[in-house]
Image (cartoon, rainbow, N blue to C red; front, side, top):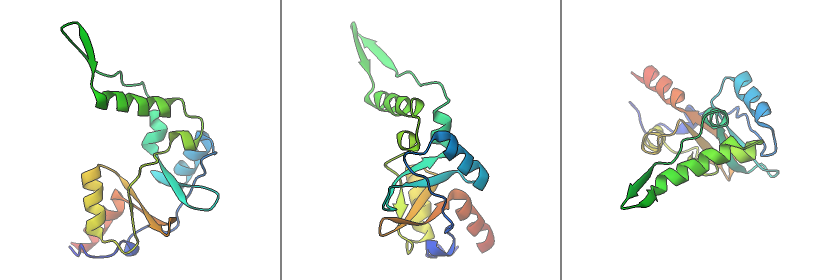
Length: 155
């Protein structure tokens, strides 16, 4: 497998983008119409400020995960990671716009990064999409499916 192949050769360059003030219904329509699982969110200058994934939309409809609390000697302890997860889920559950539901910490790479870089980032970060940025602007997006199709063609 030529893992040094640059992402430019497999990334989708016809990138559907969203704005933070769009409704979640508009975002769901865009993802469904285009048959995609994620779209970068851009501000007025075209700079990427977030990533809205289909799982972010699902989180707005899902039951909230109640944090795990442990009682030791009459004192209740809630695990910090559980509180963080609950806060994230609550933020998404009450979101009315793309800006409220999007992930602001999302994985990015440059167009000249390698397929190996993308595969490693996706695997280690447990993400399904990587936004390809060129000067802060969306140049493309790579999904796990893009990597799998490349692997199939290369073998």
